[in-house]
Amino acid sequence: MTTGTPPRNPSTGARRSRLRRYLPLCVAAWMVLEIWLLTVVAGAIGGFTLGILLVAGIVLGSVVMKSAGRRAFQNLTETLQRQQSGSPEASKPAEQRSQGNGLLMLAGLLLMIPGLVSDVLGLLLLVPPLRTALSRYTERKVERKIGAAAGQGPLGDAFQQARMRQPGGTVIQGEVIRDDERPGPQGDGKGPRPPLTP
Image (cartoon, rainbow, N blue to C red; front, side, top):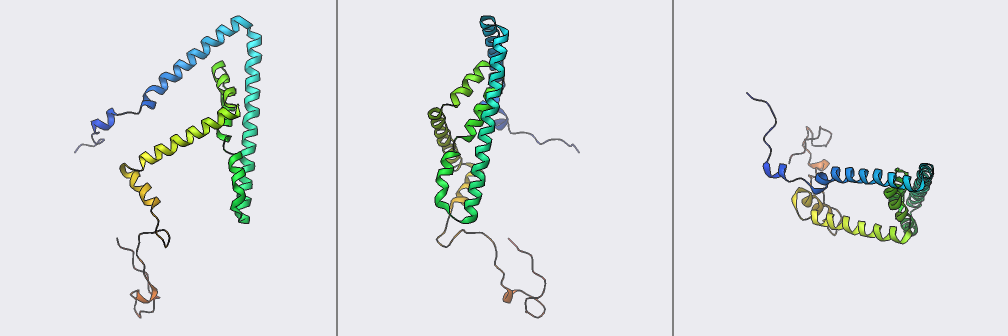
């Protein structure tokens, strides 16, 4: 009797996503570029000035992340208060304000990472028109990926079932057992419930 892992399908083992394959290489190239750029800039403007720039980036990044977190928390409390009061019409301004919070937090994180390329990317994300355009592009891309996944595989079936609506409401598969039809010693419905069968 042998115990071990079942044999893997060679087609699924060979097919790795591009992101998993190239991400370590991209991170290593980015780190080498950042270190090289830091040494070049330190030689040009001096180490002390470069240190001040890096500290200023860390401080600015923490301020940006703190304000984005505060805005997100404020939008969450406003949304919860509106849901409790039952006024869904006033939710659109809060949604518009909270649209770029994730990208603002990413900008703060990029500013806090020591390096000049990450600082430039973080500063670019602080520009409102660029942040709005990137947010819309990302939203469209995610919706397209979800739409493509909806048509294939076991997740596609789950998406289709989640989208199905009937005029009377949502359809939930199951069995209805009424009290007057339940088998019992006296037929009065006070006996134990039978288990649900598929």
